[in-house]
Amino acid sequence: MSRTAQVVGAAGVVIVILVGAGLATSLSARILDVGDLTRDPTAIAGVPWWTGAVSRLTNLGWAVAATANILAGRVAAPSRRLPLLLLGLLCGALAIDDTMLVHEAILPRIGVPEDLLLAAYALAGLALAWSWFWSTWRAEVTAAFVAGAAALAVSVAVDLVSKELFLLEDGAKLIGVLAWCLCGVWAYSERA
Image (cartoon, rainbow, N blue to C red):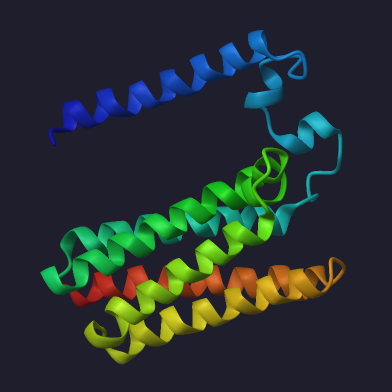
């Protein structure tokens, strides 16, 4: 894809998002101002800047993990390409979910249980591990993937057991996200 097409595509995405924000504001009585959709949540809520700081850093980590794995997948050997691209897509989906509270707030409102999406993510991770990572990766990338999956499983388990163990739940999630970032970074460095 040419650079011009990439710029046009990026500009198109921005336009669609802004037009969508404008339409949502005009169509919903609950959204009082377009700023409710475009401004930082801590500024709108009037809470201190540090509110949700670890969560926001984790969300940035998801974005980095998605990007690193997709970029590594684009330059990887053919046998390694698909697992990295799929891991990148999974991280991207988790980034959107975690940032927008999809499994906690949006889907339950339309009747989709939170546990159903969490189970789907777990199955996607298991399928990815079973189908590709065990047979195609060197020890370091496999270790990063497994460590990340284990840390994310701990985070989900803590969330299911208690809604009060924030440090353990969110700490395990951050460790998992960073481990999956390493999958892409290490795989990218192996391409040489």
